Image (tube, rainbow, N blue to C red; front, side, top):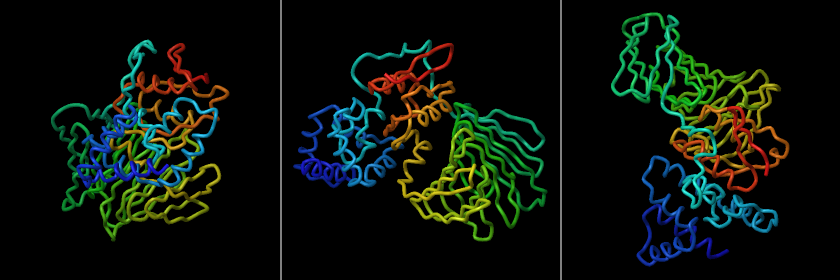
Length: 386
């Protein structure tokens, strides 16, 4: 146990650039002991956009993660996915499952598991203007310049659309909408400077130019907000029976119609949640889970970084059900997945999936858990217990 704690400290120091030469050699020797160790060190070497977020996740609740792994190590019915978690860096369940992030395992490459390669999603969306016309945006180089009837200038680039309101013109604000289809993602900058990231299968409706006393938008699906501070104009999001009000903060809302709960996670600042029955103020690192059918809200302490990892190119799962994972994969890969087979409900996983990987590789790795298998039948993917 002590050895693992020492390595845990070395990894944090390595990430922060505080290792002595002797400590660096000790860490390199540890990395040679197993592929899992080597892959974790390679992750911390990686300069990709997800490194900072993953490092924060790594430092979240080490002691709790240790206890879970110790208990799991003594369970006699552990299968490959869970055993692999105990052999990686035991400081966090998430990074212990590092193979799911890297998806570079030895052995047979089964891209032929399905009738064709199922590619990941990409930056694409539709802009619905106030006159009802729809314009496809995203994926193309250069800038598309448009304008709304209220004098708002619009610039659409490859991955973001920017709304620039001319407040001096005095035009009456109109409603615009961004629609991100299955297999898409996109971001937008609202007229007040607030930025919104939209996940696949999501849409947001908003005035192209906010009024002088309020900023209100409505959301369907999932979005991450970074709201520009404006003490005189609260920013409010309406979504599935819930109203989230802020002044200037960052938060994530997941509110797909096929999910049982609306999940609101606060990253910075504070937000006020209101339903017909409850009012609740969140602090950073807190998550509210609303059951729309009852209007009841439960409050949880979480690592908020994990819930915005999708904006940095990764899916993060903590103790997630097979059905929950498959719903997320289905939206991103635009594939119908049936995960209703008896026996799946008891299986839960923790890990990371890079959004840029093909669905074929994701399915291959999950197959390698020796607990489930993905098969294709009549154009639909079916998940079955082994």
